[in-house]
Image (tube, rainbow, N blue to C red; front, top):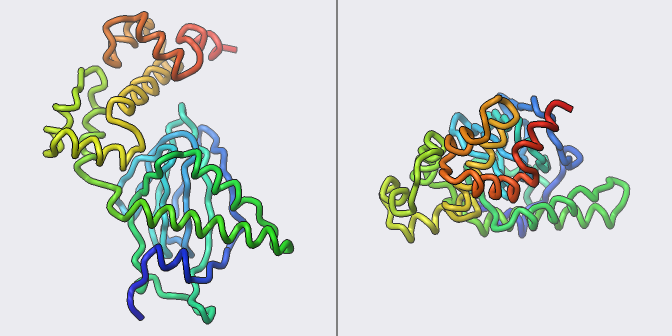
Length: 268
């Protein structure tokens, strides 16, 4: 049997659920590990952040990220306890038109994350897939269509949405949030032109490099406010801001509460 890609699966394969689709709102201490997945699975990250290792290859988790796992994959995931995950999970079998299981080596399944353009579209598809009742034919059809749409979304994004060069620069940003990173410097570190770097970064993370940098700084600032007793002025400097008033406006915009109020609420 020739190899069949995700587009073919979404259009022609029989998809049989092996468990009820689930939406997890993870507790702060959540982590998950499987030495060998028993079936196919789609994960969609709706909120939060963290990291996931698929067969020992590490990837970041963020809203809009999708994974399509195959049987026997080794998966280990953990979240940022300051930014808990909400994730949609559907487990299923892939069968041919005669109802026989298709061996995974006959399928072209992309490895690594697929970054959808908007996390809201992923959430809408997940909500459709959750409307599933084994005894209700209409809801079964809705769920089946939702799963196929999700697979089409993965197929459309392409198997090359993860780029190691972009991931390496991403790790570099995280290691020095104080630095005044510029698009030119980041693109140079990746070995790409600024336009190529921006295009691939948006494809992988769903936002521009500068937007992503701001979100990382605010997430780290929130962690420092909640977990340390550092003055706000020091937190401001540690995440790359010289003007405290501007930092506090950014914090209010992204965290929806000012740093001092968040710290006071921590003790309640």
